[in-house]
Figure 1 (cartoon, each protein chain N blue to C red):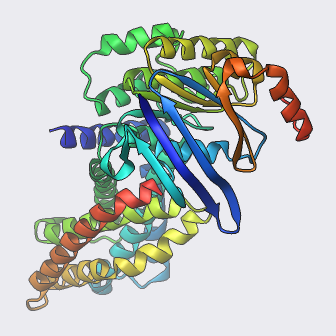
Figure 2: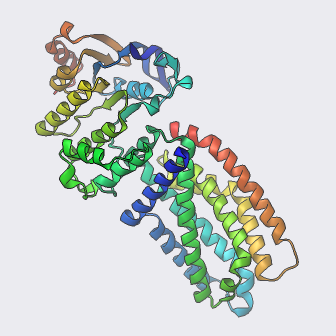
Figure 3: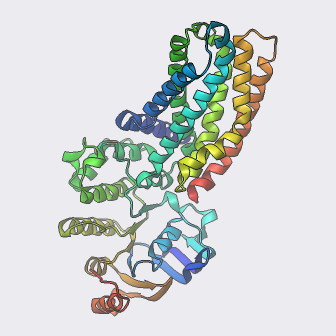
Length: 233
Length: 225
C-alpha cells in the first residue's frame, strides 16, 4: 500500500523551476534515498511531501487522499537541515514539551528513548551545550515519541563524523524495523545506499531514475555526482 | 481538552524559554525603563502636567516595548525551525496561536505592571496606582488586542530577513484603534473628564473580537507558508 503518491508535481520559484514532472510513490514500510547535487530540488521535494510547502502544480496524495482531506503533518516526522529544537531548553525539557503536545503521560517512555539514543546522561544539559552529533540524535529521538507513519529526513548526516553517522544509520534501521516508511535525502552514497529499498537521483528538478536498490550500482551514483562536478562522499 | 492542553504546553514552554534565555521580557523591561527615563528628561513632567501626559507616555512605552517582546517570542520559534515540532504534532494551528497569544499576553502584562510602578515612582504620580481598578478594563483589553495582533504579525514578519524592521510598519497601523482607545480611556479616567471612557472600552472590546476572529483564521496560513 502506498502511503504517499505524487502525480505531475511541479514547483516554481519565480522564474526558477525547482521541480517538474515529479511522479513517485512511497510504500508503507519502505525506505527511499534521494541523491542529487546541491540545488537539485531534494529539499523542495521533501518539503512538498511533508506538507510544509505546496506544489505549484500537480497532486500529492497521502493514504490516497489529497492533503486537504488528510493531515499528513499529524502522521509524519520531518527533520530538516535545522534541528527544530529549542536551544535554550534542556534535553529533557525539549522532550517533555513534545510529550505534552502528544498528550503522553509516560515519562518512562521518554527516558527509554533518551537512553536508547545515548542522551540520558545529558538530559539536564541545555541543547546549545550539545555537540552537533548529539543535537541531530536528539532531533531524531523526538520522532520516536511522535511515533509517525513516515520519517522524512533531509540530509540527516550533515556535519557529522563517521561515528555519529553510524549512530544515525543504526537509529534509522530501528525506525525501519518498526515498519515505518523513511525518506532520506543525502550526498553520502555509502550510508544512503545501505539504508534504501529504492534509490532515486534528482537533477535539475527531475528524476534521472528511481529504482530498486539492486538495480543500481553505487558506482553509478558516484559517477553521476562526478559528472555533475560535485564530489559524493 | 486537547486544544487547551496544547495551548498550555506552549505557554509553559515559553515561560521556561524566558526563564532560561531571558530574551523577551528582560528586553521589554529594559526598553520600557529607558523610554520612561527619556520622556522624563524630554518633557515637562511637573506635578501639574503629569496627569495629562501620563496616558500618552505609558501607551507609547507599552506599544514599543510590546513590539520588541513579541518579535522575540516569535524568533524563538523560527530559530532552528523549532515551530516545526508543533506543526508536526496533534496540536492544531489554532491552539498554537492561542498558546503564543497567552505567553505574549503574560509577558506584556508583566511589562505593564513594571512600567506603571516605575512611572509612579519616577514621575512622582502615585495616583496611577490608586486608580488602577478603574484603569484595569482599558489596560487589559488593550493588552489583549496587542497580543492578538502582535502574535500574528510577528510570525508573519519573522519569516522575512527584514522581520524586525517590518513588524512595526505592519503592526502599528492595525492596532491604531487599540492605541487610541487605550490612550483616550486612560486620559479620561486619570483626569476625571466627563464620560466617554466606557465608549472607548467598548470600541476596544469590539476590535479585540475582530482581531481574534481574523487572526485565528489567518494564523494557519502564515505558519504553513
